[in-house]
Length: 444
Image (cartoon, rainbow, N blue to C red; front, side):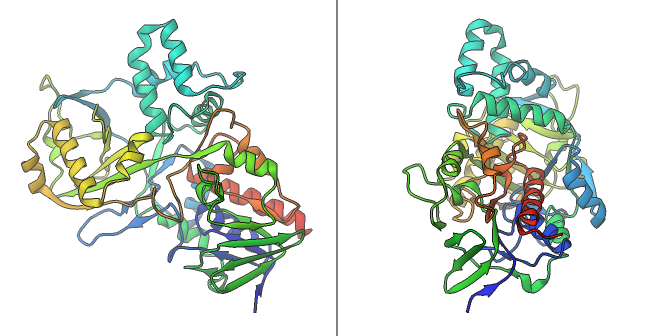
């Protein structure tokens, strides 16, 4: 017997929980159908006995002074720690302080044209500006590191116009300031879920088919069937969109999503990110010194390297814990995703040894644990987060359009303001979708 409510929310990540939270606050009955045995989606906080801080295997940073996230944190009494510390660079085992990374990269990223017609890839944009001004080569290297590492994007595919919008959103959101949840990012998951009745949340419920017509939706998950007057679909882009070979995503829609929606989905791509958190017996990096011996790294926040596998590392500073995170984004992350956990750990330790000039055997003796999650091959994510390809700058705005006042899409990939790939973008999208549903149902 199908279970019937006003609204079906497909996906229990930040967008889905934000939508369900808003709907219940307005007295609109909604159920959350989540495929995982936990809520949070790509927010995935792991707690390890004996480790002082939570280990983030998904989202870690609050990118900027963003009201959507900070308001929830304030209401729930969640402690945020502002990210601080020095940025260092490793070259052939020698360390030195990195100059202002953002301002250097900005020499290139500031030239992106948000109105460029026809649109082109970041790679094509970069070739042209380097041809015009070869002195920008060093800045271009740092800008590319940002495109791959922060946006998770392939420089050959990401569109100049989309990237310009994302860079402007970063500036507008004051992303020179970043924060961590001291007790774990999953605190915001609990805060959003708190107001949703327990019997309205269905975990381990993988929706594989959505049948719909105006004013009625049926969602099937195995032998279970749920019915509603509308559905907010918040699953990640790669779970919703067609795969590169043209086959549909894991969710079958009957009837199929309309042409404009499918074309908009094709204007976005799922980026790649590889993360490995290493735990040590002690924060040995605090004893490292700069190349000239004039400074030590006791306030190390981030470390950039030229390693082909893991070019970025960070500590928990200003909180002190013996944890180091290895990070790669873009095409190199997709390559790392082919490795099993043991090989990934091996790759990271080799990269760290080369970066800091300490023998691998010595670092190995200090290791107490290694933690990662393969988002690339996780069937409920199929990648890290989205970005716009050439010609795709307007795709999120199309995805925000209600489909026959019955299907509503939400999630970080639907944010029209350049905040794709962020938790605050996902939260805002869920609230927007809930408001659109309220209007469509004539509630309130």
